[in-house]
Image 1 (spheres, rainbow, N blue to C red):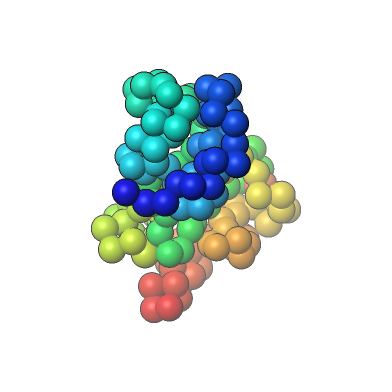
Image 2: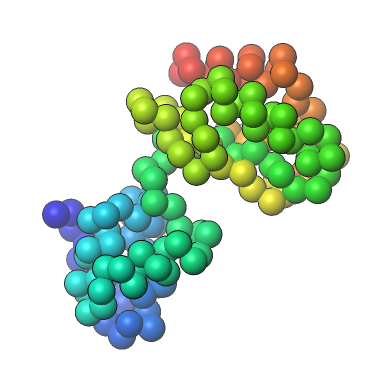
Amino acid sequence: MGNYDYLNEIGKEPGNLIKGLQAIQGHAGYVSDEGIAAAADYFGIAEVEVEGVLTFYAQFKRVKPGRNKISICDGTACHIKGSTQILDWVSTELGVKPGETDADGNFSLETVACLGCCSLAPVMSINGKIYGKLDRKNTVKILKEYRQS
Ligand code: FES
């Protein structure tokens, strides 16, 4: 079992569960089954309750993030400019669905509400770097760069 000593900085009251889960995600990038067991043990609640909280709050990730994190914007401006199509292309190209990481841990894919640069719609970010005015050609080209890195 990993080291969850950092939980000791958080009070053991069950009301602090979310804080604890945020700490676990902050350390590992996601909340693993082991993280759930550690939180349940620390806060003295059932694992199934911890899982319920994780499911309820979209901020928590249950899948280990890939080395390259792709966020496709599906905010209004990007949606109108075809973000669904971009998501399809990326998903097909990499063989990974939103909320998943590919088998070799290279890419994880998610959709987000707005990346704050709507004038460049449709937009995606990879590891925080913004790519705008996407079409099929430049999307595939961008992905290729990250495949080689
Ligand atoms: S809606 Fe996509 S960047 Fe704002």
